[in-house]
Amino acid sequence: MIFFSPKKPHPKEGERMSLERQPRFYLYYASFDPPGKHNIQIAQAITDTLTRNDLLWIVPYGNRETEKGIASAHHRREMILDTFSGEVPSAIIDFADMKNGTFRHNVGMQRHFAKRHPSKEIWHVIGARSIQHGAAEQSKIHKNWKEGAWAFQNLNFLVIQYPDHEFDPSDLPPSSEVLPVDVSGTNKDIRERVRRSEPIDDLVPEHVAAQINEYRLYR
Image (tube, rainbow, N blue to C red; front, side):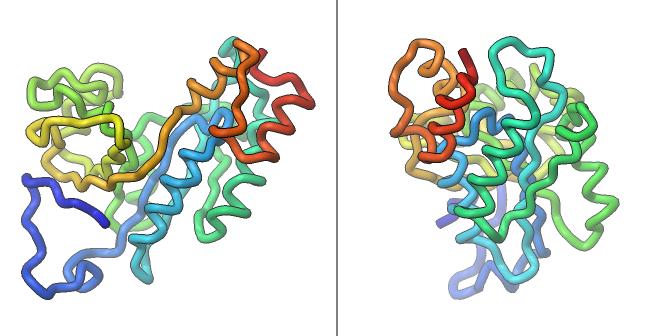
């Protein structure tokens, strides 16, 4: 179930959400390095909310080849394809950034997809930690994103709330909805466990663990 931000009007009693809004384009932009069970659960939770003309668009970051301790584009692509094509078949996986070795910031992605899908609202999928201190204009979006202050005020956000992360509703962006998902772990957590030679079976699908072990990734 989606919980609406108090900064957005609630649907009237008895109204169906599919009748009151435009079709949506959910942009799930992340490293997926490696893809974890939490990524699958988030994508599945989003697909459960989709109406007929909505889209879930998964875009892995590009331009990561110079970062120490991460997987090559080839291995990332194989793990991502195996993960989402099997678990979230309705999602569209877009490897353009990986292919071109680029990193498009979210505002750039907004402009890119808004031109190509003018009939849809673009919604950016983010974790709740990204909005912390938003009311004070000190969130990660404000401080780390290109055109962050503008993005916070003007973009649509689907905020993923983990069970272990409470947040102040006043920190929510003006156009936002909250989707609680019962998940744990992050892509960074997975990489750090591998580096410490700790088990990762609870955080990644079996095929991802097998590929990490076979090619000694993230060590």
